[in-house]
Amino acid sequence: MKHKISALLIILCLVTNTLPLFSIDDYYKFPKQSYKGSVTYESSRNLCLFSFVSTTPDPTKEYLIKGIPSVLLSELRNLEYTYVEYPKPNIVYHSFGESPDKTLQDKIDAESLNVKRKKKEINDEKDLEDLRSGKKQLAPEKDPRYIKITIKQLLDRKAPTPDESFGLASKLNCDYIITGSFEVRENELFTKVFLFDDFEGKIIPFEHKTSVIRAYQEMGPLGESIREKLQGKDTTTVAVTAEGEEGALVYLDGIYLGKTPLSGKKFPVGKRTLFIFKEGFHPHKQEIQLEKGKPFQVDAKLSLKLSNSFISVRSNVEADVYLGIQYLGKTPLERIAIPSGMNRLRVSKEGHIDYFRGIDAQDNEEVVVDAVMREGKTDVYYKNKQNVFLDHTYKDFATYSLYGSLLFYASYVYLNYASRQAYSAARSDVTLVNGLAIQSFYQNNPNEFFFWYGVQNHVIDDAESKARNLKRVAGTLPMENRRDRQLVGGPMVILMGLMLVSAATFYILGLDEETVEFGYLPINPGSVSYGQTSREGYGYLQFN
Image 1: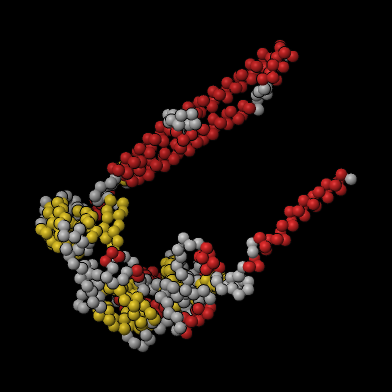
Image 2: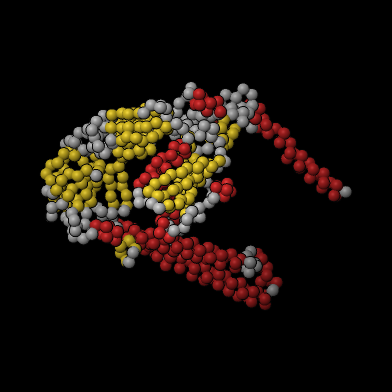
């Protein structure tokens, strides 16, 4: 009968705990929820570059095994995107509920007003079809058909055969594989390259013939043809000049193409962002349209920055003076006009250590620099100047001291834990802790009481002695001292403090004008617009 009652109670408990499950739809308001379908597409692919194999082994030509892929790598470095008409969907969110009008991400964004996210331009296959038909146009960084390429060098691995690439691609996470073979006949080099596309499951062959002596210099067309195939879209030639200004850096969609005057460069057709940068000029940015079969040519106008700040540089020996990468002349320089803003000054002379200094030039003000040049080698000095002992620098010792403080803090925590455990271990041996029980025991067994009391007192004294010794070694930090919030010194606390002071001391000793450097660099080309002087570059501070 007892078992039946127990079983009935268990069943009732299960039923009462299960009944709320029937209302879970109402609790989470599932019937009222509705989400529009959306999709996310692949964003990156890996290009693996393997060594090549010689068809006719020749010890004198072994340098070509890694040399050929290295030359191809230099041609492919500017390849940032590959164009795929039908990219792979990573995650597909299907529609949910009746008459959905917002995607799941839209609802999350609507409920998170303080969180800023980049607007997603492509949410489904229909948006992607609008791109294909030309109804919609996006920059490559927002267009899922442009997939970022990351190049992985596997030159130390054996070159795979075309048949081996099918299995090797998945194993090494390679979406594309480039390798091949070469053969030397008399004074000519015959190169065969194959490009394996794991997504399409096909192999694309290439062949090229050069002279052996000028093999590297004559391999440009081979790299160009491979790059065009990987770009996956029609290209057109691009020519850029800057009204006679030479050496201006040219970027298309953030990809560096070269310096002005630029000609003969091929780039995929479509809407692009052209960016031109040269020190001393305002950056030039404009939207352009590259069309199939129509070479693109532009002569951009660069606006000169006004040099309304001044600098004077003197040194103990005559030396060359550079502001950033611009040569100003030889010392002494008196009141030379320079652009305002942050930059780095370098004073250099053969046989002397280069003098560096960060400057912040203000409008209509003069910066005066007195450089003391010291004899020596610049590369040796700046490589070892911070060394304190052997190859260890001030920064190294600051780091070691910080690690030491963490070690002593760990010891401090352990000793405090062991101190508390000493009391805990003694509690099981102390049997009578109640006053009435002790009085009763004394009255009923007076002969045994004093023996019992001595044993109990010995246990307590041992526990307190052990705990005090451990606590004395550890010390007490103010945050753990409940009595008066004061620091109680102990070996661990003292050593911890010494390590922290040592870390700060070594760090400060390692700081000087040459160790802490600040200067000026151009900003990311894709985010600068013409005339925005405050965004033409950014200052940087670094610990060398």
